[in-house]
Length: 514
Image 1 (cartoon, rainbow, N blue to C red):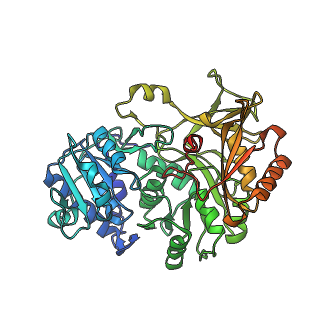
Image 2 (tube, rainbow, N blue to C red):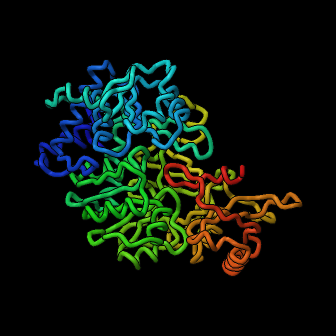
Image 3 (cartoon, rainbow, N blue to C red):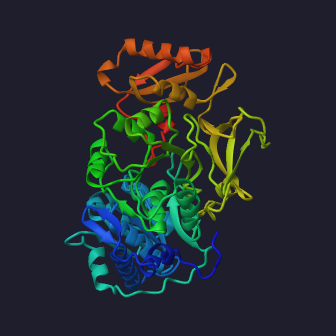
């Protein structure tokens, strides 16, 4: 993928190269503070690198980034990488206890926290054995024991600096898994991985161009958003719009009203919510992408009817860094996740480890490609169990049809055995989502009076006032009409929202606990 394995530092490709290629004045980012050119971005990266170096941060030391989506997230990420340090973005929605675990687990030497997150995150930095530097960003008076990142950057030199001479196989950054089924794991990614996803998916599938204006509702702190809002547009010299706040239909609509968005990245829940509200100004929109959860029901058809563009559904992971199985422009098939992204291979494996060659059989999805990480940090047993030779086990169940398209069947640990027959909760959820009164749904196993497992549905309605026994009867009849008799939910709970990870995945274990 990268011809010269040493030296290679991704900062040159994603930041400095644009100045050599004449994009100094082109707009790289639009955030709360306004527009930032590629030249200004390069200067901010250099200043961030200088601030870290002046504080004594050294190569291979971890720098945890707990920041909202603004241009200095990008500057901090590449600034750390520029001096050979390891940026570790973390979920800004987590508790201080969660972030404290990541600081300890990663042995972080420095942390950067956005000012608006400081009050909530301050307890995370206490009694950290390895932490030496706490930077708070965009704060007038830094709290005791901290340093203003803005002030430190202002004091640092904006002059060009040669990035640390890493190789393409050096650890470059970490991302923590979402922890939807257990304790988060530090996924160690290599220097080559950022450019690989930008080339294989960003260019190869999306066809992202220099004249694109992109917007990702998915945040920069996790794998999906990191590619959408950072490496893909920086790879080609495009413009990215950042939203520091929560992506709601109203806030997303405002972004569309103020910017000529051409590529939009979202998650199924957001697409459903946007279809239930006033249409956004999408005159410039040419393609949309969805990941996090499979696109269910008739969302694709309704979005296509409303806006005249397709949603490219795909699956990726923190481990693989971005999408590796996807629909693509001109080849969008409702109800499927598509085919492997060029550069990746997939296979379905049964319960005893044999490859499934026949179509329409359920198996666990394994993937092979250039962005498999080095390991889970300090978790050898889980690394060996997940990364088997050149393959990574995803934990997702899939079905391949006769045309070679892959259809999602649920997580391996979410499958239900009803009457001795395996049932995919996703199939039931997709059926429920096709009902006009259902915004979204999640299905888990629940024991009946005899101790036998049957499907139980948690449903978010488009109108909460309709939550009544009559609606339960209607949804039960709907499922019976479209599913095999043993698959219909025996119980329906109407809820205001479903518990989810930051990537939009439903946390079914929370529903099972409830």
